[in-house]
Image (tube, rainbow over the protein chains, first blue to last red):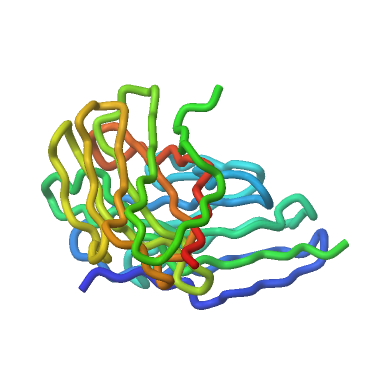
Amino acid sequence: AQRVTQPEKLLSVFKGAPVELKCNYSYSGSPELFWYVQYSRQRLQLLLRHISRESIKGFTADLNKGETSFHLKKPFAQEEDSAMYYCAPTPYAGGTSYGKLTFGQGTILTVHP
Amino acid sequence: DVKVTQSSRYLVKRTGEKVFLECVQDMDHENMFWYRQDPGLGLRLIYFSYDVKMKEKGDIPEGYSVSREKKERFSLILESASTNQTSMYLCASSFEGDNYGYTFGSGTRLTVV
């Protein structure tokens, strides 16, 4: 069965410290991977997607096919990074999946001053 | 520049009522989705639609139905509301294909009493 796991429900760091939010998936084929973020009282929004190889707000995510992981990293956390983060792969299996995403359980990141 | 609009931010309904949650997008997206968001469980897919009048069950369709009569509108229907359907409901839309990610609505907090 296709599955995505975010092992940490809560993650606390201090401002300026590095942060890594873990995401592990079990999919066949080559899934497309996304990270979404939900700040307090805001709608869920796309943070970054693997295919773009981009860095958004200082965050990057590297796909490790060997470990089937897509961890989100930032070298120096800021207080405004405090939010709920979701990892979301598409179960792409060579045919159309209609862009259907499966979300992890989410990690609440708190960055202390 | 709101692009995915959910008609109600908060709803309180009684057990056994038929409940309609409405979602409208103005981006000409082919795909539309309904998720529920619960603490510790992340987002779980209820139903999705990849075209007008087309629908597919997600992971937790029991107790729900959907309607998509027009491309821009996707309705979630709770046939007979129950207290275990108290949740945050999120609507999302995306272009056809796997690489674009979702645009989310702001959510409807439904309480069934």
